[in-house]
Length: 125
Image 1 (tube, rainbow, N blue to C red):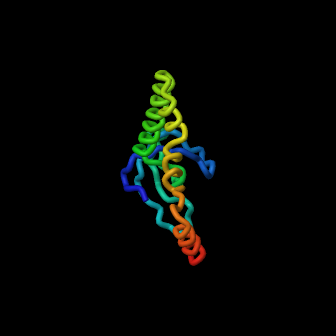
Image 2: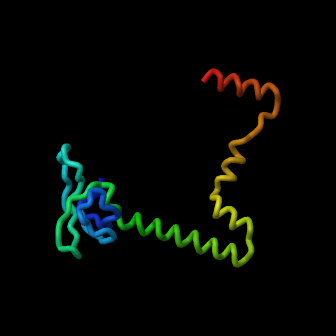
Image 3: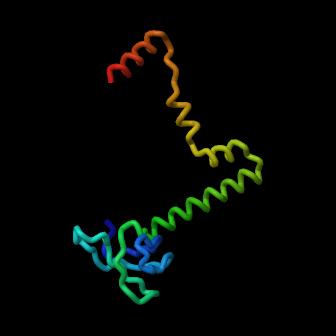
């Protein structure tokens, strides 16, 4: 649950209320009625009005800024990898660190006894 006074950005208009998508606002109240789908009352200064919005329609400004910074960082690393012809860096950025995690998890049993022990353990679970 977001705090009162938190600066949020309207990211969606789920119930087609003509919300100003992309505009910022401030949470001025909670709607605690269990029968109501709206969670917050948001003051939108640019539209000069208060709107009722569900939690899915708003996002904290800090969160959106962090996501944008990560996207820009990733694009800059891709550009650097392409400019320097660094294949390893490019593949690591594009695939993430999934390959390293998969290699670690796919350890082969060293002996026949270990293999039987692992099979019996999985069968017991």
